[in-house]
Image (cartoon, rainbow, N blue to C red; front, side, top):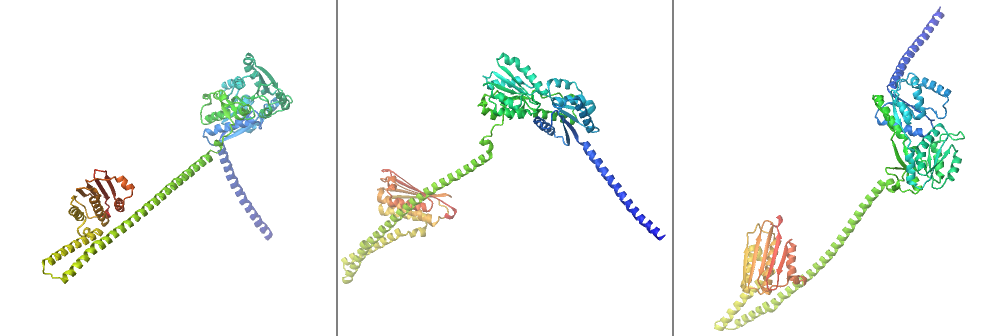
Length: 618
């Protein structure tokens, strides 16, 4: 019994674990299913576009179409667009059994899936989708990309279908070739033997036979040759001929080369220029041509699909793109065949132009020019600064030379003045003092009561008075104490009066209203200029009249001394370096003043001193 109970308890534990695990599994499946449902909901929310290409995956033209379609869809600004791509390869496999199996595969793949737009690209894919549309994509809008003109007419009759159409303009391409090579008399038509190849060959003959025959130009068909034989044939081509590359999807040996590869190998060694009719060939060695753009047609188809996804009625959207053609040339081939770009047909476009040094390194060149200009400016500034410095140094040296010369002359003048004072003290004052001493000695020995002694004593008194006056005059000339005692106006007036008494000259002094007292330096400058000017006029001007005028305003003080004597050549005097004039200019310079001297022989002399007043000068 106990064993049975233990067995039941154990079984109960096992069953409990199983129940827990089962519940966890249910929860997991519930949430996992919800996630899957949410993911399916998100997928259903995306816009779905299915693109069918006529050729196999590796065909280069498919790359151009695909790039254009994706760019056209992206330009619309729509988000969450899912693109499905199918490569039908119908140019190589077109039997009934292959088509049936292909339809079964596509029906199974896209069953129960929402498709917004179907884009069949080029003839085989367009015809396939139109034929199987009811089974594969009922009521789904079609955007047929790159349809031939006759197929475009068929599309216009299909409900909910639009697209782009193209037309190969062989004649304009040959016209471009004749424009650049006017002497050409033979045109080689190069193409394969596949269904598409034969179609384009027939179109080329239909467009070119009549016009070229009327112009005396022969057409030579080169059909389905393997690349080795084709190259050999071109090497034997008549000089002056041109060639037109059609399509080479299949050669006569059953090979399926790419047209672009055939063009690259052929053009590399071709002795004659080769032209093309669609833009994928530009860059493979062809010179150029009036081409239609595969990538542009893809872009237009993508834009049409975007309009349909955005809600526009497909029945209101017309087929477009037939006239999307342009004359395009390879710049490298123009160089090879020595063709000037100015000789191209009007409106031509050039590709693969080699970038110039400016195009490649524009930013570096601009930066280099900027740095060079900056460096040039710095160097120019340094040169100008050096020139100014040299000029300033020379001026300084000259000023120092002039200063040294002036200092030398001032020292000489001081020595002359000292010699004069010494001479006067020795020859005049000393002699006069000695004579007075001798006279006093004689009077001491003689009788002071007689008349002769009294007369001699009187004369000695007068001599002593004159001697005292002369000593006072010399002291005054050395340092005018009256300037400190009485002020500027009275000092100048005293100098004028003293000169008038001594030299018997009419001196008139006029003084205006002066502001606050000037600085000692300005007072001394004004007084010395007035004193020296009066002294010079008395000594050299031979004048009977001198006018002295002192005026001032809040900003300047002005002193003018004018005589009416014989005058002199002031320019010559300055050039000769007269000490008196130099000392006057130097006194004015020390206080920041400006001194001018105007004099002409026979017209007198006017000395003007102007000193600017600063706050510290008053």
